[in-house]
Length: 136
Length: 136
DNA sequence: CTGCTTGCAAACAGTTTGCAAGGGG
DNA sequence: CCCCTTGCAAACTGTTTGCAAGCAG
Image (cartoon, rainbow over all chains, first blue to last red):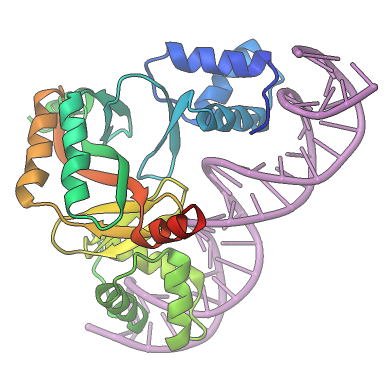
């Protein structure tokens, strides 16, 4: 592992991710960065997002429809992807539920289970509301 | 929804997926198809995999490292991705475990939960064996 | 100074799409 | 016959990479 040198860009990317409640795509991060660093390049954004993810300082979320999204590290939690609008919401379950799933899985698997990711699919509150007003 | 016309290619793609225990990528399917249809094009493979997935006759699995893989439809089950070799294994849990997770999630989410996908990360039996022989 | 980091542009991988020719209903 | 499906190649999207210049240590 190489040692990392400080960079304004990387610091700001991390700061943005830590502070936002969204789960932005690389492109969203890029757009946001340009407000502060008008000349920043997409390549730099990708490089830093990957560096931060490798260091475990942020999380990569791979969604079904292809896109990758990024999230701050925090309490273990799951994600709900809205099948209407694609938004990613957080969903908290207890640590117990979390561990239990790995334990159950280990019992029926011949290899070793280290962790897991759960993605729920559903319809977010906002889209539910729209649905209702369109088909009353 | 348009009506589908029979095609040898699509039938064979489905047959292959139904019968294999692997979770092939689009490219793997393509390579396999060429044995039977030497002139088949990648485009056709993609078109048919997507058609089959849209009709719900096969399943798309999105893995972390970017690739999409395909699986036959069968009893609800989960997947284990080996972090060493990238292989995707099946993992059976009970229907009860399956439903329970959605129910738990619904309780702490404001929208609607329809289904979920769980991906476990671990090390498959084969890689465990290699690990052991390299670091005894 | 040294070499990690940047902006830029070109390269890439995986997937989709427009088109004319082919074939099922 | 009609129009869905195919093979082919080009287009696209999201991501990575090579390079020379810039800047932190």
